[in-house]
Amino acid sequence: MTAPQPSPRGHPKPLSPREQMVLALIAEGMTNAEIAASLDLTRSTVKRYVASLMWKLGVHTREEAVRVTGQAASVWSEQRSGPAA
Image 1 (cartoon, helix red, strand yellow):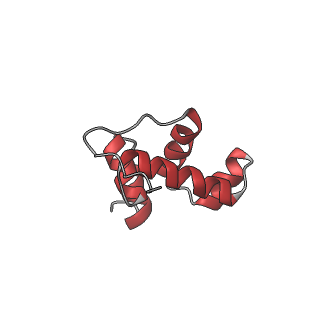
Image 2 (cartoon, helix red, strand yellow):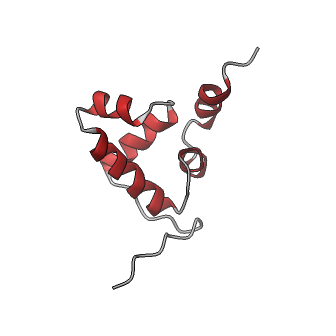
């Protein structure tokens, strides 16, 4: 049996409600540990949700997932580079 191929970016697979929640927290700049604490989940469960949503969206990074879905990308950029002066 072969592993499923990532979905093409033009045709993302729908995210579950929990994956959508995790993605929203990623867009806020939260780490897996912070998301786990916020949702009362283990870090490994959050890691599985992140891997699943990235596979469904056909992306390789958290930043791409945020950008592809139009989630608050400006929040992600600000978290990564610091606030604009």
